[in-house]
Image (tube, rainbow, N blue to C red; front, top):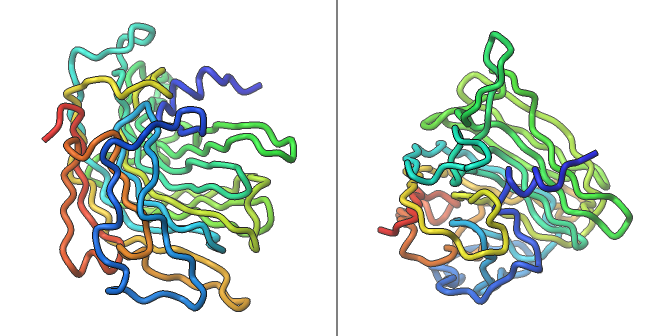
Length: 293
């Protein structure tokens, strides 16, 4: 049985329709789309989207089109926690929790898939009381087919732990109807697995995203809580979108004209660095501060 309360604790930034809020400072695409090239009949992204309450997060999301996946390379952020915001239920853990992940939404089913700051198992077999490394996770919402919501972590093994400053390649892709594949590789480590998600098909219409976040424990659907936590210098070297185009698998850059930019709950919490060349390939450097910059 899946402990749904644990899901909320581990992934406080999971966004559901019920937690939608009025966007405070969600900005449209930062560059005019005329600067960029597009595929034949490609749907353009929304100019802006509503934020969801519960976390501080930088999200870029594609248009709703025949995309089947997303990939990119990212340097994991350095972390400074707020030393007074401890979880009373788990005193060695903070109420703020960094994550870097991908995912999407297709046929009404949302997924969040990537890396979150987690506990580990030491070589003596003991599980750490504190969270000390990024570990892969996979989350799906329920689907009208009857498929239930699910949250799972990669095994607590050292070959699946990643740390601040390490560079990883990450991808999420539909490989057959109802099946997603997650791949994370970098710093001499690798994790690949498949994940059932009934709403995702090779011919469906959907959207894909990447997210950098400070999640907050037991705070989903509530205003982001004040914190002095900071996650710094997470650098995306590139981001690609994947689709079926005339029967072939096509990979294209998620340039600034091919995505909707979201800075939630307000722009003051983010430092985004990007030059003109980086804008063409979905690259940027992200820092997030609960206090604001």
